[in-house]
Length: 307
Length: 178
Image 1: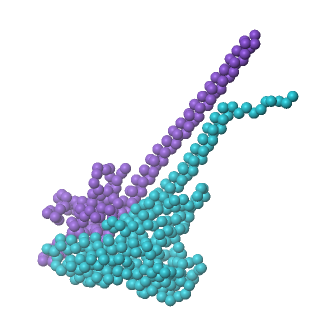
Image 2: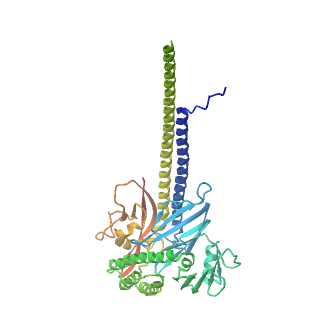
């Protein structure tokens, strides 16, 4: 006789399988979300820490400062420049490489940096981040400008002033000789096989990157080399906004001091404000610089120097 | 006789069914208890993480304020050249709301320490005053302060010539404690 006894698939089994599946699904979903949130949190905290690192780069009375940051993992640093508002702002966010889940996930929360001028590509990727800063003066110190890069550069036939600054600041990512194939080649004037070309002198000129070209004045030469055109032009406009507010401050101070001091440069300051306001792109810097030199001359002969 | 046998079999099946139902209920309750336990553990962990994150955010804000106070006095809006703050400039900087978005701090105050005395500075009592409230964020919030000593300089007409006169002061930068 054949046995009619089969596997009894009772309700208890069905219930256990269903609930088990739900629990496993929830556990997997929860863990994935947990890891994703953890990465987002870590990226946001690191971006905030990075934004704090910009503070000690204020040069004070020094001519410049440099710093290297070693990150734990390969990291993408996003630098978005927003020129809207009274001073504009930078929105810095990070995305860290991970061995679990997606290699690169969406960057963490954007950290607003309104009081710094960070010149870099809109996205930098690497484990070592090189920073250095210099004062931007036109005619007074408008602000420190920060250069951020993860790339290695080789400067071919660099200007004497540039060589002195690279040596003086101990910039490890910039070579002045023995270029390798991995380096981004920056040619000053002549030279072949260049990724970036600088036309002009230390005080003013153009930097060409492929089909893009930007104008620089003194202090902005590194900014033009290290930045994207978009970030560079945006930061130039932000610097002009800061210059305008400072010029308004000096103009009001000149009026406030008019009883005590004579021949303060009020009228020239208005001219400087109007020129800075009309700046559309970096080429307008040339005119701003010319007027700033006149204002500076006026300030030097005034009874009370404003800066 | 058959009827009796059928009744006792039906009774046995019902007992079995009740037992199975009881087991299912037991299992469901157990599952609910386990899920609730994990939810509670998760909530506890979240609360702990939130506190840590808040602490970390406060530490970051504090370190940002410390660094800002070190370098703010050298920025053009405050500086009078080298290692000093221009109080003439402060008089025109007070309440200039456009700058509120530039410095991410709770307040910026300058206090004249030596010689002391005098109240809040305005155009009427300047320079015989001691507190320059450069910026103060609105709202009643808890605050911490980081301070650094600075020279407060201004132009004075002495003997027919404009000369720079300096006093000792303290630059206080406030940050929010959440």
